Length: 585
Image (cartoon, rainbow, N blue to C red):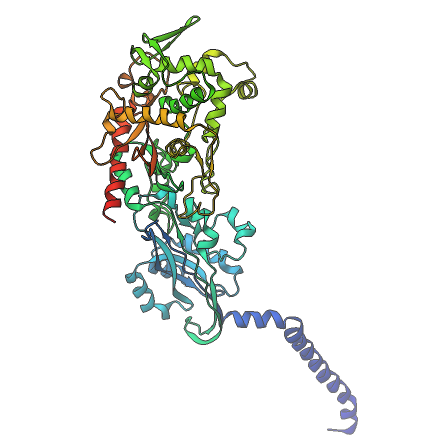
């Protein structure tokens, strides 16, 4: 090669070589500097995995430390993020899930860098074995454990205990759930929801290095989960079970309260539901069937249903009349089966003849209460009803999960605001026997009965054992003589031959109470002649023992007819169960 030729092309060669090195340098700069973090993250996501370590949820106990729930392990199949070339047809067959649903889950999980994509939960052991046997066919597929809830007593007490479920969209946006991982089950109803923060604890985390099949190579770091705190409810699960069975399949509610500390010993709402149906996600067909059920199993009747109280309202009217001096223990009236007022006739369930204060309560004479209600006026009736907690929610402690109702305790001011109309005296007569605008919840009636039993001690009812331990004891400014007179009459309701509640009379313990039959629709047909949905509601309130009461209760049987025949026997069974259970402990 000549010198001239070398000199002619050497400069060009050097330029080309330098240009190639410059382009390579630019590419290296782009890969390592400009796009370095992105590629490092992609590389790490293929080998670094963050595993959530579930926290054991606190246990819910009954008052005798009987566990009402258990934490149980379950398994779920997941896939490492950014797994490539997935055989979706084969994987859907292995997991027994719809391929379209599988693809949707994979697309939703594409944004995840370190968290595995959950594909199927609630795997049986045979499913786990099948997946483990074929993991080499599906790189990145893994089986992981988690914890869920088992409700030991199934339907029993479900309206008190509640259930768990995945976080709702609203919960995910709430600051209260900021530190809760999406796979965590949280309380969705009743005690499980209301006490969720203390029950759920906090999850831990384990960071590991894995191979392409998801097998652990090295532990990089770990934080331990913190178990949730246990809670002890005030309910006695044996009494709760006995109370629910006492209804014999009827629809209704019952609330039992300890008269000394206002702890709820049983809270029944029937029909109920099985919270175990919700723990892994309820089936659509079952969910739809429950929501279409005309008996409304999700309705907490003790707190959310309001009813006219009927004659179980009479003890409060009697107390008001005695305190205000419009009647006394020796007064009486004549009942010929109705009270004529203008062009209206206010009926009684029978013609009682001459009735005293005592007999009017024992035989539930409406005419007597029309007379004293007329003298009292609606304002004083409302005043005393509210003193005993009627017309206001009890604040029992399930408000967040269950929207407790206030009911209605009418007054002239209330009607003017609600209906823009004046109050009429005839409406006072209806209110004096617990009809008309008056409406209450079973929980309110149980609270009222407990306050009569303990002679005016004011305590909010509670669902936690020792929930009122620090609560100061206050008492209504009502004379002991007034309580003595009313309680004597309530004893007669159950224990005298003509008492409307004699079906509650027990050989085990002396019971005092009051029956109530609340009209659903006005009419002259007897309740048993009406269509079932139009029949009267059956009420009974009671406390026992009559001397030195320990428990008080209210029971309502929807469309049950007469309180004495439908509700009183249920109350008797529940009260006897309580004292039999107490003797056996």
